Image (cartoon, rainbow, N blue to C red; front, side):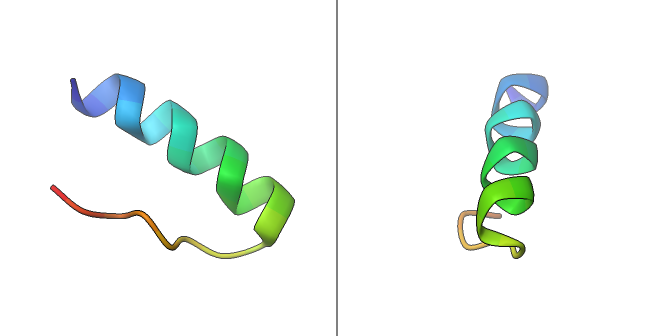
Length: 24
């Protein structure tokens, strides 16, 4: 759920350097 999404966002944030999928 939120944890899985946060994990993915964390990976993207590290690669892209910004969050672009921080939706609920």
